[in-house]
Image (cartoon, rainbow, N blue to C red):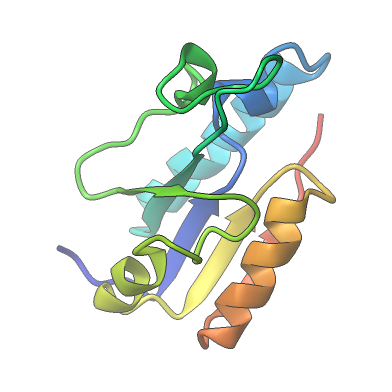
Length: 138
């Protein structure tokens, strides 16, 4: 486990978040480029997979829509956590994983204005992380 003061946390990298968006291809490429840049700088990459209900019309946990978008893949050394909406820290080991790697600054990558972005940013700040939100759209 390598230590790093910076982490890039992808909050909306599942298929159900990006599939069928008119800007899907460009957005996924832009985000993948940011992941590549963060990796090159030695940052920790963390992905959140949000568990979903098995209700009609929604994405269910372990369904195809629940998986990471094809442009993203967790690699060795990355953090992959499962969480329940809207806060990625509540009910997951995300905070422990980040603190164990000496992360101080958390760079959030999320779809703008999502409840996940707002709740996770607030929780991260409460846990002592410096939070920077990256809002990249096509």
